[in-house]
Length: 370
Image (cartoon, rainbow, N blue to C red; front, top):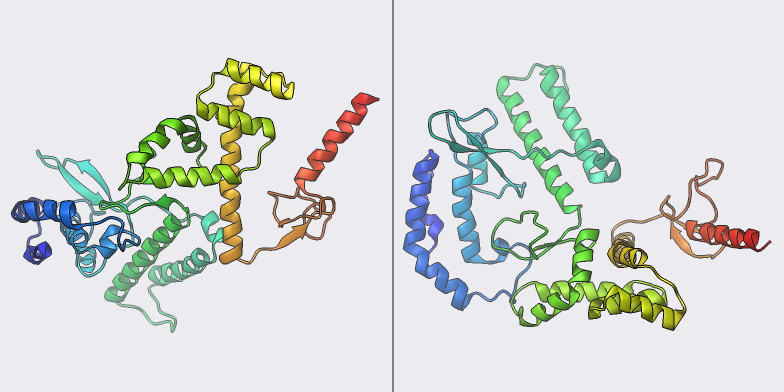
C-alpha cells in the first residue's frame, strides 16, 4: 500500500478544491485501507499513545485530515488560521487536540471556518502548576515587548520582529493548553480519530465522575455479560478497572451486602428484609435508594481520587505530611484532611477531620445518655 499523503498538492489553497483532491485519493486507496484494517492491523500489538503515533496508515490518514483542516481562505474572518500556521502545521502536528469548526455564511453559500478553540489557562491554573506559572511570566514579558515596541536595550523593534514575537506567544499559549488538557488526568484509549468528550462512548471514561460510576454500578451485570464477547474493544478493560476499584473501597459489612444484592438484581423490598434479618437494621426505601445511587458511588469515586493522589505524591510531587495527634495516621497537610486553624503554625488543626467527627459523635451519645 503506497503513501497517500505523497499525492497531496499544497499549492491548492481553497477548501473545495482540496476536498475534491482528497476524495479522489481516498477513492483510489479505498479497498487497500479496508483490507489493511481488516486483515493486517492488530489493535493489541505495539500500541502506545495515539494510534497515529505508531501506525503508518493512521498517520497517513491524519495527514489527509490536516490537509483539509489547515486550509487558508482569503475571504475568511480575521481569526481564520493564517498562512504561517498552515505552513508550520505541514511539518509538525499542532499542539492543540481539538479544532472547533463553526458555520458562517458571508456569501450565498455556507462554509466552514476553522477557529482556534476558546480555551484559556486561568490564574488558578498558574498558581497550581509551576510549569504554567513559568510560561505565564514569559508571556507577560513578551506582551510588554509587543506593547512598548522596544527591546531590552531600549531600541525600537521593527514590525517584522513584533510579528515574530506574536507567533512565539501563540505557540506558548497552545503548549499551555496542551499541558492543561494533560493535567486533567482522563483515562483515554487508543483511537484512530481525534478524541472528543463523549461520556456515552467507552473511549472516554472518568472514574472520578459520579454519574459514570453510578451507571457502571447499576448496569454492572449487563455490562459484565457484554464484556465477555468484547474481545477487541474497551469494555473488558473498563469492567476490570471498575472491579479493582470495588475491591479497594472500604465499606461497612451491611453496605457490602447491599452492593452485592444490587448487582444480583434484588429489589428494594428483598434488600430491606435481608438487612432486617441479618443486621437487625431497619431501612426505608428512600434511604436504600440514596445508598445505592449516591453513597456507594461517592465512596467509589473517593477511592479513585485517593489512589490518584497517592500516585501523584509518590512519583511526581513531594508533599508535606502531617500526623494526627489522635489516630497517629499521616496525611497530606491540606484542608482535605485537617480543618484550618489560624493560630496553628501549619495553619491546620492537630487532629484530623475523621477523628474530630468521631469525638463529636461520642459526645452526642454521652449527652443523650445523661
